Image 1 (cartoon, rainbow, N blue to C red):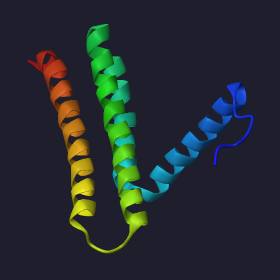
Image 2 (cartoon, rainbow, N blue to C red):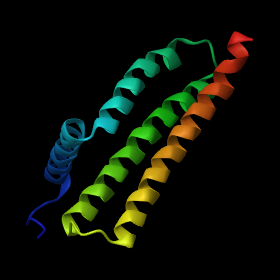
Image 3 (cartoon, rainbow, N blue to C red):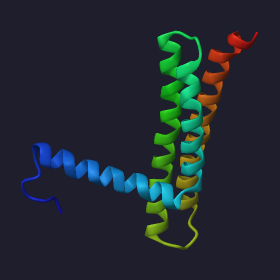
Length: 123
């Protein structure tokens, strides 16, 4: 049920609180999110330090955030599927597999982007 008088700054504050709650839950319950966040924290200074164009720097940083965003969505899909029921159902497995494939694709995009941008610097 939607709360009454949920407009303007009050809505933004509430939404921010829910977002922080979600990030905390992902950190506590999702090992993959923790690993990817730690990797992003390590890689972000590299993206800021290397001598590349602003667009290339933005591409490196954006792909790190894409991985985290897709992992959050994957975790949400898994939680909803698990909440619906514990019995094995082909559609439940399919939903989880597709969400996992999305994470894989985001990681592949991130890896490829970093490879293409940074390879000329070491050759």
